[in-house]
Image 1 (cartoon, rainbow, N blue to C red):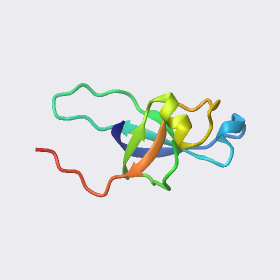
Image 2 (image 1 turned 30 degrees about the horizontal axis):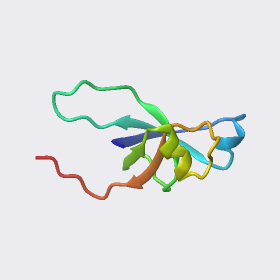
Image 3 (image 1 turned 90 degrees about the vertical axis):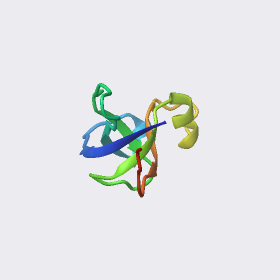
Length: 89
Protein backbone atom coordinates (compact mmCIF):
# COMPACT_ATOMS: atom_id res chain seq x y z
CA UNK A 1 0.00 0.00 0.00
CA UNK A 2 1.21 3.47 -0.83
CA UNK A 3 -0.13 7.00 -0.58
CA UNK A 4 -0.43 9.05 -3.73
CA UNK A 5 -2.04 12.08 -5.32
CA UNK A 6 -4.33 11.69 -8.34
CA UNK A 7 -2.87 13.82 -11.14
CA UNK A 8 -5.07 12.94 -14.10
CA UNK A 9 -7.32 10.54 -15.95
CA UNK A 10 -6.57 8.06 -18.71
CA UNK A 11 -8.87 7.82 -21.72
CA UNK A 12 -8.62 4.87 -24.10
CA UNK A 13 -10.49 4.00 -27.26
CA UNK A 14 -9.59 0.32 -27.04
CA UNK A 15 -8.66 -1.46 -23.81
CA UNK A 16 -8.37 -4.90 -22.30
CA UNK A 17 -11.76 -6.36 -21.25
CA UNK A 18 -10.68 -6.30 -17.58
CA UNK A 19 -10.63 -2.49 -17.81
CA UNK A 20 -14.13 -2.19 -19.33
CA UNK A 21 -16.39 0.16 -17.34
CA UNK A 22 -13.55 1.05 -14.94
CA UNK A 23 -11.92 4.46 -14.54
CA UNK A 24 -8.16 4.68 -14.92
CA UNK A 25 -6.34 7.45 -13.06
CA UNK A 26 -2.71 8.57 -12.99
CA UNK A 27 -1.25 8.66 -9.50
CA UNK A 28 1.91 10.36 -8.25
CA UNK A 29 3.37 8.61 -5.16
CA UNK A 30 3.79 10.84 -2.10
CA UNK A 31 7.27 10.81 -0.60
CA UNK A 32 8.67 12.05 2.68
CA UNK A 33 11.10 14.94 2.57
CA UNK A 34 14.49 13.67 1.45
CA UNK A 35 13.19 10.53 -0.30
CA UNK A 36 13.79 10.16 -4.00
CA UNK A 37 10.70 10.59 -6.13
CA UNK A 38 9.40 7.74 -8.25
CA UNK A 39 7.40 8.04 -11.45
CA UNK A 40 3.66 8.31 -11.85
CA UNK A 41 1.66 5.16 -12.51
CA UNK A 42 -1.82 4.18 -13.64
CA UNK A 43 -4.32 2.70 -11.19
CA UNK A 44 -7.88 1.41 -11.51
CA UNK A 45 -10.26 3.61 -9.50
CA UNK A 46 -12.46 1.68 -7.09
CA UNK A 47 -13.49 4.70 -4.95
CA UNK A 48 -14.70 7.52 -7.24
CA UNK A 49 -11.54 9.53 -6.56
CA UNK A 50 -10.88 12.71 -8.50
CA UNK A 51 -7.96 14.83 -9.61
CA UNK A 52 -6.18 16.30 -6.59
CA UNK A 53 -7.40 13.64 -4.13
CA UNK A 54 -4.91 11.91 -1.86
CA UNK A 55 -5.51 8.18 -2.20
CA UNK A 56 -4.44 4.85 -0.76
CA UNK A 57 -3.29 2.48 -3.51
CA UNK A 58 -2.77 -1.26 -3.42
CA UNK A 59 0.17 -1.84 -5.80
CA UNK A 60 0.43 -5.58 -5.35
CA UNK A 61 -1.17 -7.60 -8.14
CA UNK A 62 -2.82 -10.38 -6.11
CA UNK A 63 -4.37 -7.94 -3.65
CA UNK A 64 -5.54 -5.65 -6.45
CA UNK A 65 -7.17 -8.53 -8.32
CA UNK A 66 -8.83 -9.77 -5.12
CA UNK A 67 -10.20 -6.29 -4.43
CA UNK A 68 -11.84 -6.21 -7.87
CA UNK A 69 -12.85 -9.89 -7.76
CA UNK A 70 -10.85 -10.66 -10.94
CA UNK A 71 -8.67 -13.67 -10.07
CA UNK A 72 -7.20 -13.83 -13.59
CA UNK A 73 -7.20 -10.06 -14.15
CA UNK A 74 -4.31 -8.10 -15.67
CA UNK A 75 -4.48 -5.41 -12.97
CA UNK A 76 -1.57 -4.43 -10.74
CA UNK A 77 -2.69 -1.19 -9.04
CA UNK A 78 -6.08 -0.28 -7.61
CA UNK A 79 -7.18 2.74 -5.58
CA UNK A 80 -8.81 1.39 -2.43
CA UNK A 81 -9.43 4.55 -0.40
CA UNK A 82 -9.55 8.34 -0.38
CA UNK A 83 -7.55 9.93 2.44
CA UNK A 84 -9.44 12.64 4.35
CA UNK A 85 -6.43 13.99 6.21
CA UNK A 86 -2.75 13.22 6.57
CA UNK A 87 -0.43 14.24 9.37
CA UNK A 88 3.32 13.63 9.16
CA UNK A 89 5.54 14.44 12.10
